[in-house]
Image (cartoon, rainbow, N blue to C red; front, side, top):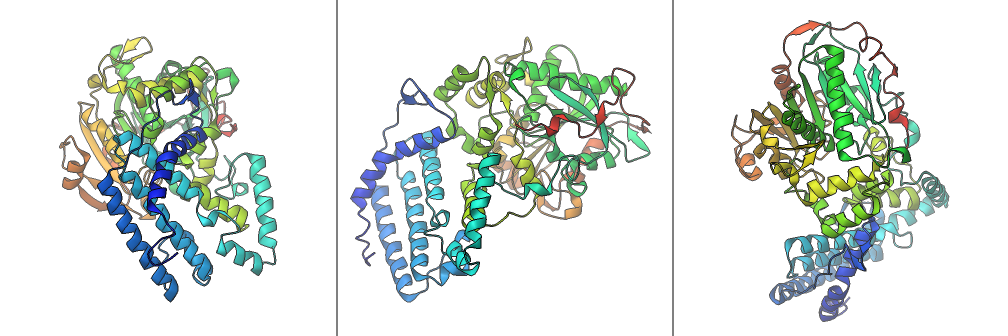
Length: 571
């Protein structure tokens, strides 16, 4: 590259990007199974990509300046690779590899900046940005043995053993059907994850209900039901004793029950959203009432489990029933106005395609869902492991959270299609009377019970603004807390770890914008769990003697020890 950057012809680059940007978008969308409808991707006309001339000129000047700086740094041997992918000394001690890495970073930044120079609506720009990010992550020199200086050095140091191990790792991952993010051989459900003592006390074709053994002599009179997301397995709430939210709730004196979802097979391919609300969430609430004799219970929903819980509460209110005294929503979307990066996958064409494909029957494969969520952070959750496992022959360290993340579940097609249309596409849940579920029209404005709402500041699945949106939907007493980190790590943050922080706003003040709320919120060190526990105790009633046995009578007898067999079924 010359000092003036003549190796990068800007006129040609702009033209090429204009021609290929939409194709990149199409490829990225199809990679996630979005498909085509009537010959057009997503069933909609492809957007015409045009650049704002002034922005493009400014970007060209910026690129030439940065390319000149890069060239001078390369000549002097002082290239600064500010990216963790190139942190190993092998990149710094190899001038050619260092220049290649620096050039890659410059070009990737520039292509992303070109998206900002596109004259298009917000959604089109988001889709273009997503496509370019996918390409940039996949094209990194770290992903290719011929270009990865660190992998080459390791091959030399190990006399080729790292390459042999990498091939073995690749064959193993092909056999298991996904890229290994952790050493999965170190974990077994029921043995060293999902180990809190309990028993399955009810089951149907949708779920098993687990009751946990009390850890205190007395329990609160209102039992506590947890509804995890059915797109994942419940033991994210019960990984290890030290970071188990389930065990924490039990140790705080709550008689705790958890829904363990069945991993759907073809026998459930026709199940709908209504089926899951009526025969799973509402049935679980009824079972907990029957077992404990409590007229009201407390309930928690996590992610999609929270969306399903609030839907069930809306159905129950429409029927004149009030079995839940308080609700907790963890990283939950009820108002789908702000869905973050997932919005790039959603429009009428996508939803119509899914309805045609599986709206009347079929399964959304668990590995497809898992891949979609992984590619939302492709560098960290995909290519990092491709380079480590296959090029460097490494075995990723054991990590309970990533083991759970790889343990995927299927979804019934009709359930999935309804969910896409009525939440992500049409945002019907917050529109009184718009969504009809289980034969009644929903009005979540009538769900006026006390609700504790939690959102994670860096959540890429449920953005903090989306989680906060629930404060504008429900009219009752509310408490909103924001935690540090992301969708999972922010939630699974036990007090003993003394990690991260959380924020609490002024009591009863919920401005329309989450940014306004954040400005008035106070930051506190450590986990948000104690704050939630104090809140929940205020809605749990008096303390009574802990039960001596699981379940109740022949109808709700102990079927098998926790965690049960449903959670062990593989997708």
